[in-house]
Amino acid sequence: MFSRLSSLTLLLALLVSPSHAARIQVGSDTNVSLDVGLRLQTWLGWTENAATDGSDLAEASIRRAYVYFNGRVHPRVGYFAHLAGDRIGQSNITANTGNGLGNGLAVRDAWTELDVLPGANAPLARLQVGRMYVPFFRQMGTTATFTFATIDAPSFEQGGFLPGRRVARDDGAVLWGNIFGGHLQYRAGVFDGSDNAGNGDVRTTARVVWYPWESENSWWNQGTYLDGKKVFGLGAAYDHLPNFSGTLDHDAWIVDAFFNHAFLGGVATLEGGYSEVDQDRTRFTGDYAYGHAAYLFPGERLGGKQQIYGRYSHFNLDPGVTVAVNAEEREIGGGITHYLFGLGNRAKITADWTRSLQQAGREIDRATLQFQVSF
Image (cartoon, rainbow, N blue to C red):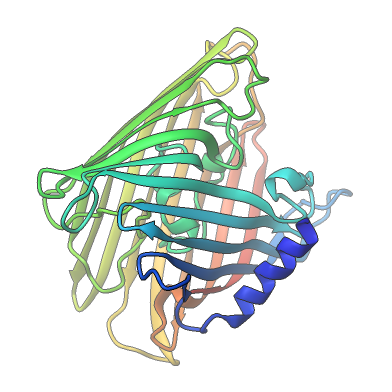
């Protein structure tokens, strides 16, 4: 069954146009549609002291390979699904086929959606049921990480900072929408805590964002708007998961801000956030902050446009923590992205350098060259 599904996925991916997802009308009902697309990132990388013998490591890998399906069966009823693989071919990755890590494809996202209260341009209230991002970090709702201004989300956000998830996702239901003329977006979710040892406790999350200028009214945001869209968003979120490890409770909150605007003929993008976590004074109890800035230069050269960026993140473990984790404490980096042939995020090359300072005082440098195709 899986082999047949994989073959069908590959066939549909090969049939789509190189510039747009394929849209297929199903039957004679014009309300029923299916969009199919591919998002692919490949890496050439070098990491200091990362080989098993302690030497430097150079390797090629597939950072992300996503095939997505979405569409409608009615003006108010739709669906979305990702078949995804991450870090395929990377060293020091424990393969988890069920989650699509290190090997194979997995159902990364899959939900049905009902517009409870439709809006003129965006839903006032939409119910999604299935597997999806936990609505906490802004960057975890950024078009599946394919429109970042930087090469990737901070390493800390991809780790165990929020427990009970499958690659940043969880299984449950989210009610979200846009109110006050689109100036406020809300998301409220209940989840089963996917990796929570089946103890039956329910995760509750909530996120709100206020937009005084132009709004972002879809489920997926952009990490940078290359057209200079005037966006300023102020967000806040909360996540609670009881008994995620025996008797330990997880509580976290975050405030963040996003800014995108035309500047000196180009486009400036700024983003940052601050979070505090309490896991009963164990594990990741502490505070976390991140920030990055990017600038898209005006004009075209070498067959495309260029954007530079710098980023920083840190996690401070609470001094009273009794059981610590080997989490990266600080991460600093920068890079340049070349958007090819006016295609924007559909075709780009990014060169990145990152330095990580871990708890034990160990510094690790990484250099990465990323190639991306997305449609």
